[in-house]
Image (cartoon, rainbow, N blue to C red; front, side, top):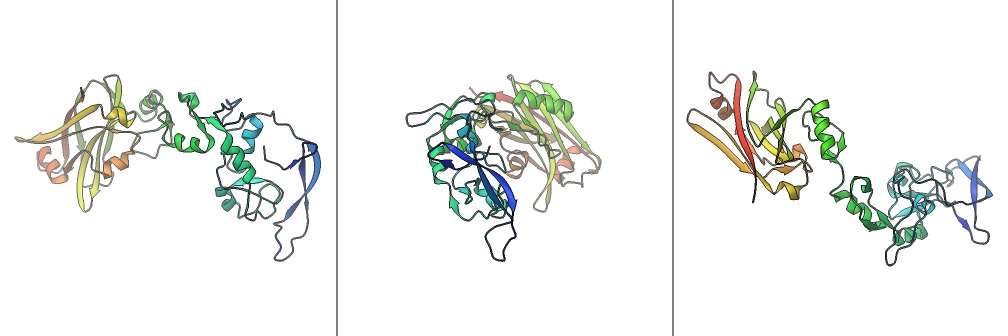
Length: 324
């Protein structure tokens, strides 16, 4: 539902029928202009696309109650997300968010009139008075926020969906932890193990392929939580290396309650690492590039593999424990 100008006497607004006129050289009209006719405005219409479950908005000390109609006025007609200052409007009163104003080349997508640089200060003021529930309400967040604080909260809300932690492809799936565990098992065929200790053997016939050539993911169910064990080959500068690290399927504040150790070795030598698992809020690439794990140079990995060092046969063992 697009915002429209009010007529102060009879609470009516104008609905638009588009008529086409020639565009004069250097003129401000993009192509089409508005021909208006009075039409009664009704605010109690269907809910917005973003928050269909919202029927009213809670009010704070200085907030106002929002009907669905007011909520719809704040929805950008192009990207359908809620608008934040600066909110722009064309000379005919159609509003648009600042990002979409650039995308439509300063031409109103509703009536095709040049937008200009008009701010819809009234709508910005209305938004300032509103308080809205978090968009992740259906995932468990029941807090209410002032309109202009809502977006910042949602970007860091602990109830927001997690990204799929699978590192072998660009997977766009998001969801809560139980959903992602099922997704990893069914769609990515990831190995699932119960227990807090592990002993894995990674084998590769051509260890000279190091640029993301070897990666593996195993999920462990430990202390009633899930952990992702990663193993990958990559290039650290000019040096080919392997890295193994653990990620926690949950928030960083919970991840810090756990520790883990990793170990590789052979021929009377050991190479160990102890650390804190990173939350899957941090991407696989971010953890890998920060080298927050057991980093093994290829020559050392091949030494531990034995034989003539032509094939990678590396055994990685480890355990997970909960800090007291």
